[in-house]
Image (cartoon, rainbow over all chains, first blue to last red):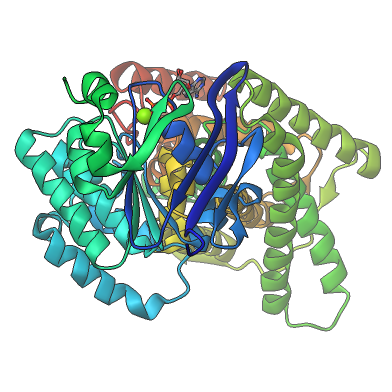
Length: 238
Length: 301
Ligand SMILES: Nc1ncnc2c1ncn2[C@@H]1O[C@H](COP(=O)(O)OP(=O)(O)O)[C@@H](O)[C@H]1O
Ligand SMILES: [Mg+2]
């Protein structure tokens, strides 16, 4: 088996005396969509924050190919190729849609490629093109989620981390956002997808991990997880 | 009467320009760190000394006066920026996640330190800023205006427009506004947050440094306590305009300067000046608690 693109080994993360993540290991192969599912408070967002360097691990390692990420500052982790769509979208309400997109290119060296990425983003999300000069804060929830994903595309990372992209969206928009995730993956971006919506996540991903109070309870191919009685009972409504 | 009004308006523009250059530093640092940098008035004072020493050193050479003036501005802006960045790194950065009150008290302490350090090393005797440029007086009818006055107003306005462009149009300015809104997400977008915060201190203080030299041209008496009063007025200007808002700081500075020059025309003693200024502050804050141009919506920090 080839070395994974992203590999997390024995990761532990604490907030003060609360241990949120207890020794998890996750592999993401290049070109895959891997999902991390689990109940509220299981430690999914903490795992993504650790990858992005927003929280420091107590022990463990996170590698993007050969680069150890745990030693890097958040902006260097972006430079290394991580594009993180944070929980709650993190749109800058005081910046225009265009500025939100441009900010995501802050540390890119290949400035000449930015216009073509912009075109790609606009063809994927025509709505954003219409809203380009509006402040981020004036967008609807669905539009903000599009913008959050669009920003991550503008970062042109090798792997995109998505933290509950379906949260707070109507069923139609949820379908749309998962369709977009598959498109992005088909265009060559590896995806690590965090979801509470286990049903959609397992349909979209090829491999899945189930996180339970900070530990990996189960992992396997998505179809197998979707058929697992324990997973069905706990996350798929029986 | 019209002449007196025009004359005072001109004076107000001059005073307001200097306040604006200082108010910008308060507002930029507040915008990015939610910290009222009470040391900023003393940073302005330090910049006047930098200007003084640079001017003295440069004047002994046979350089054209306008070049000396520009070089003095540059030296003062650069050194002031360096001092401010040093203060930020040493004193404020370790407190970034501490309660806000710790940082505010540190800022007050840094201000006192700067005053007393200057007092100890340079003594209490005021220094007289050498006149760098020939001060020509022009008469426009009954109106009198000096070349220094015109210079102060023009340079200040140019600097303010430049700064506004930087904040609104450049990648760095965009990053500043993003960091001001949400540091965590900014870092996830690849913005080097610490560097942007240092840049903000550097720019805000460099502008105050320019203000210091311009102020010293008009009022050439430099002493260790000169930053206190001007610092307070610039701070009030920033609050009136909406602290955190760059254009608001400029507006607030001119409003306050007009209060300062027009009050003595209406009310007998100049002691009413501070009274009127604070009344304006209170009225603005009662009517618009976030200042004239401050954001009304709740900030997510
Ligand atoms: N900033 C924080 N400070 C303290 N505890 C936190 C913080 N963020 C998350 N936690 C705790 O860590 C655990 C995992 O949280 P999180 O990673 O956000 O879970 P999830 O994303 O799976 O819902 C929870 O028990 C939560 O209360
Ligand atoms: Mg979460």
